[in-house]
Image 1 (cartoon, rainbow, N blue to C red):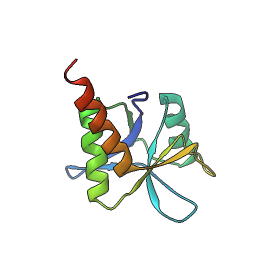
Image 2 (cartoon, rainbow, N blue to C red):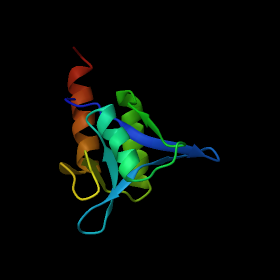
Image 3 (cartoon, one colour):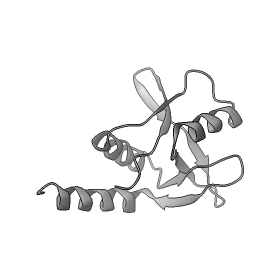
Length: 109
């Protein structure tokens, strides 16, 4: 894994909700950030309230989050979005598959 991204989330009624961004095609995408400053800037431009928190989950938790997002119907993730664009758009299923492959190859070392 080259990047362990930061995410923005809030927890309400025992449910976690993660910040999302809308692609040009209109799809919802999980917002991922290379660093805390970019995530905090997104909170400001998106007018997210103080209940939203920036976190950098450990890899196993990140995998679980990605899988949960896919199950919830979110098929994409975007890196470093702002109000108009995102650096990169990823298919979450491909990210999960690549991470699982990486884990299986590196767990024996």
